[in-house]
Length: 516
Image (cartoon, rainbow, N blue to C red; front, side, top):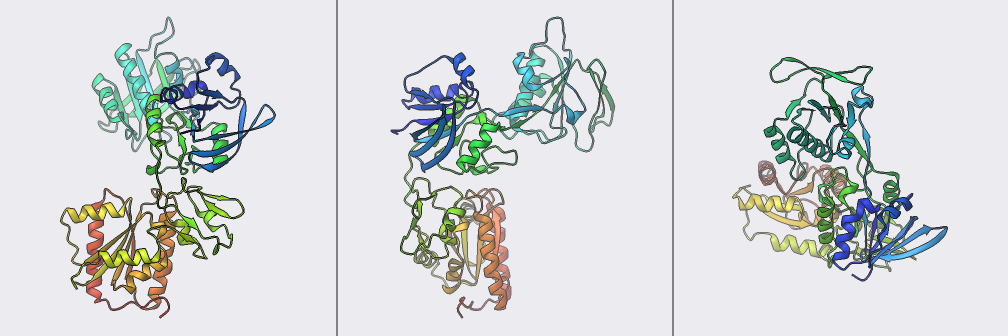
């Protein structure tokens, strides 16, 4: 990798990641963001292979993985750098939920971040014998916040012998190690008060001390608590510099504005753009720096992409449809739209949407799909004949697992896996019927879980259009779309069996083509 990796983040936020990259022999361009001079002065290091660009603001990003072209403003000048990849590593901002609980800051009411700064130890002359910890009572907690609060509870219990009460609603323990951490906290004596249908009543005295009154939902007992310390959970929000970077880099964001959409396929460090990565520090459920660096190093391994889209300049009319629909920002604009092969995921959305059929993708041409349907069709004449178009990330693995488990669907089934359901054009569906299918099942990812973000929604729209055509021909029920996941073979098998039974009951006949 000839160009450096560009890391956006303060020295404190990115120190471990920078160190690991330098140890691996990679050069690093560190862009610490606004007001970074003081942090740089405190850090005081200048390592070989490290360039620091401060103060600097990213204006534009061109190119793609391995060859990103970045344009900055730095010290009233325009600065350009070429980098192999970008990493966003700024820590999120933290906002205590005082108002949500009707509380105000006080020596006996502190946010979780303050406890961490104090090393979970009370000021001299103060004792924390009874502690109440609030976690997600008024809003959804994040795994990061939950993990931090559980660590605080464990330390206070083990080191201070404090009686700790964790007040929670929906305890988020899905992140690595959180379930074990919650179990350790219970074993150590931390008392969990879980509220499903009620909430504690919290009152704060003029001197700042809080008082709790609540009903234990398991025993029904009315309880009161006047803790020496209340630990308030916090909301995590991306700082302004990260929001601006997300806009400049055209990154998908989640509901809170973090530059990694709520998509399981993005975890742990990926964004919708190849070569643009997120360090855990920049996420509400972020991991420790060393773990981030190992994930980042794996993500930066070079990949070949033989399925990149190609635009035929002789057919392209520059309508920019491909530029607008590409979820990976792999289409750049010069004299005409061009696909950056290293940035393309080969999802096929641009090909299916192109009104001029000017885009070619190996394996997704009409002849390729017809060949797969014909090659995969069993030799027997069993009826009904069912063609399944399945996303290779969800429906394909689910169908294979169902078949391996011995699921029977009483039909002749042909499975055609596509890289994304968004690549499925209406011509592909008609091809299946042309080649003798009695019915077609389209399997897409669940909503918000599509690797290509909009692929499942685009597939749903095209299926609906084709269904309308079939309904007009009196052939209702021949085309079905279902969402699934790779770990749902039983449910997917039932869907296949139900459609096969429905087709058997209706004794399907031939389906006309769109021009018939």
